[in-house]
Image 1 (tube, rainbow, N blue to C red):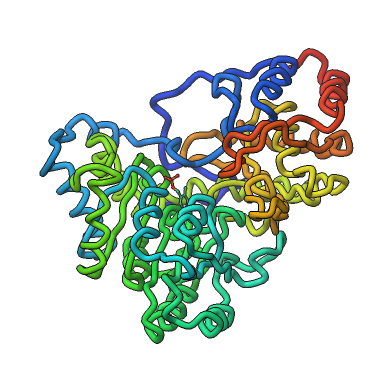
Image 2: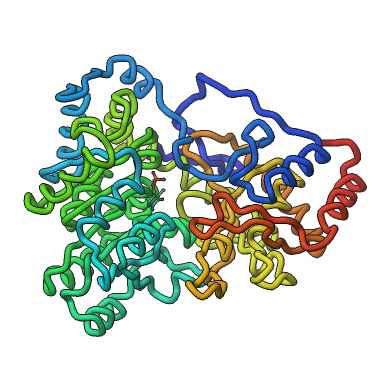
Length: 481
Ligand SMILES: *Cc1c(COP(=O)(O)O)cnc(C)c1O
């Protein structure tokens, strides 16, 4: 990383410049209110044209480099045997040192294939924490998941550097409870998605490898958010301080039997893939790719995406590139934290996470506090965040609500997309909302789908609280947007 010291206030300094821009809309609050109602108070259902800063996700919306765009122009279009595929295959071997690669159209497609091959009814997948699509694919095959993140990982505020680490004693206990042959695989998500982008240490991954080897359990890395994790390994872990990002990547990769990723995140492109060491396992998975994804040399991706991925993966090995996200996130988290606004600490990857349990502590979990806070934030700022709390859970088969461990509003900072002034605008509006938090009320379902309800569910406010919030905004800001 370019080490730049400041004479005055230190700021996260970008090591790139912007050469293509997209015009943004900031609608007046009345129009935002209307758009929110039409979207059923579900930020997933807002139209992007109605959104000012889209902090919903980092998926497929990271900025690409000039080199990526250029590579897309020379992609080799062929149904079979495309040179683009050969370049991608070679790049993954180079970076991860794995022998086999299977392409898939995105991260969840990799999870589908993995679950189909490794999960059977009654089998268990042990992991630090679930991701929505991961859990859905495992349960669809009749498996169950065990979440083994160390207890501190679920504490909102901490100074521990690696809150995504698995508690090795918990893993041993789960293996004892079910028997090693029932454990389909151990999955490390690095970094974590639903618990605040918190990273996993190389040391923890190494300890888990020993347990997996001892019991003969396949060891799987979900590398979708690996870029941020590598930055934290480098900056927070002594054993990585003097290693290059490329060297750390290889140390991580060498531990795992299978590595899969969403290229909508890793490599700032689109698509995904699975890297495998064992030939037999590779052949089993290979049979499913043409069935669900596409022929083996494209797997549901366009060759342009694959070319962008080749370059993006290579650029991910540059600390200047992967540091932008974590540095901007840290600036946002630290600013909010200084103002006494509840956020997950320490700052992680992916984005800034508001702690709705404390932000709107007057709301019961049955009224979806994180969903309500995400709706309120859009209303007062045009910023779209994502609910990551009880709404994102699934009901028990008997209809009981599963209350999430954490009620978070995730404000993703897609990589290299927003400027510091936009981050400061977000902080300003969040601070105003925090001052007026007692005006925020709960939400209830109008329409609740059975699977992945957070994507399509329609909700409404339980009272006229949104009218009151709009009135207070008008009183304080007048006709300002
Ligand atoms: C996004 C994500 C996935 C799923 O990837 P998609 O490309 O969105 O299907 C899986 N695991 C993690 C950790 C993710 O962040």
